[in-house]
Length: 454
Length: 114
Image (cartoon, rainbow over all chains, first blue to last red; front, side, top):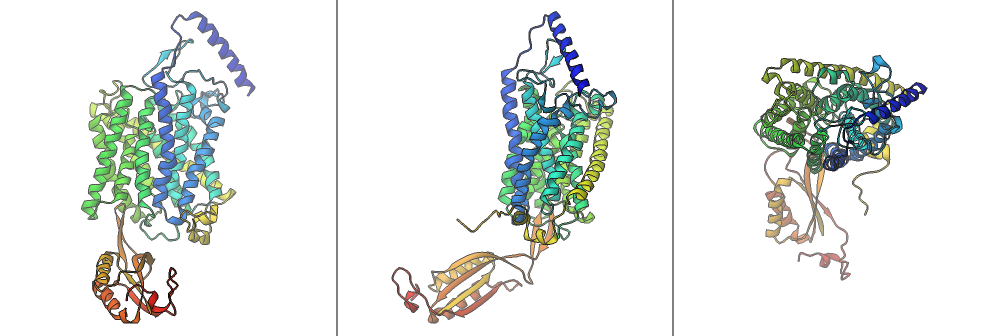
């Protein structure tokens, strides 16, 4: 720790001497950008509670709905605290140990130490300005960037809930989620988004978290679903959702919140954010309609669960691409993701026989992989001039995307396996058969969602 | 006085209600029930089509005077029928006593249908 402090003091000295020499105008907070980013942060929180809680809560059986709400709500609490203690620092700060630099951040910003409220964000996408020390900084306060990223750190482990819902013991869930955030999410966020990250330096494109959030969580989902085993009542097909109204409300809130998620990821209120908003909306719309048509043609009726799932699949897939593709790319991504995710959920999952309760892998994992790969294909120089995909002749981008997807799958897969095993050894992960039959609301929390009392 | 309880298809509820109105029975309770039985229901969730053993039905409960029993039973039996497995069940049982709370009337005077 001492070493950090010394190097920090040295850095301060350097900064102040640089400040004395430069003549550039002092960097200023842009009020428009900042206002939008604060709103976008709130939007992303809305995706977790109540968006994802409703979406997942409606899909489980009535005896387990509160357990799902509790899991999402608890993560909002615990991961936010983890984020300011070490999470942000591990994800976004620079590591003083040279060989670890590309893989994980250090502890300089632990407890948000050394960060003042008027500091400008060191991270930016299209809006930057010259800081006093000659480096480029963004136009929003650093603390706003930290909170925006905090919401991402919260929703990622929450997405995994869909895989182990209805059978995990709450204590096991808490231990696993904390370990997973510390040891899987933070490093992967560092790889892809930090200025030192090795995937960032390679030029992997992930605008709003297709790799970090969706593939990461989706792979953890399939691993935990297989390791935990099937639910006692699972018979090769989905168990009927208990409240489809919740599912649709949750999907609607996710859709709305995703505007903050994607259009906020440009870290500014500008044309790029506008484009992200547009392609996000269009991809979700195209995916929702595609899934509905599949339902209608193959299973005779358009279903509400189907359109909600399709919309979420489209939102997942457009996430990495939102800052790189135009409207044509959005339509292609929306249609392709629904076609593939539908086959995954309707045919491949029952064939393989794993019980991914709410299709966290089938929708988030597969949707994220499709989105990340298609970003490498469809990225258009008309959106950001320096990023081109395979259809514009830049096949190199596609290989980088595949590399990013592949390493995330391996890291998340192996890491989740080890952490889940460890959690099982420490506190146990599965509830008893009897408790599973009674329901997790009653046995884990002593509450029931739909009481007969006034 | 008899209590008539019938488990019927939800899709037949409107027909049964109309048939009961037609024979002058305008007073009954009903609620949704879930049960297990020989019948199965086809369900579609996210593209997966499967048969579910949990069967959604509606239960109707009516207390009538003895004289009205036969027409009530017949109305339900005819209107709830489709001929397929899963049309439901109908139970008739004796009711010992009935009171109307407002007037304290008892016996069959307390029942709505004359």
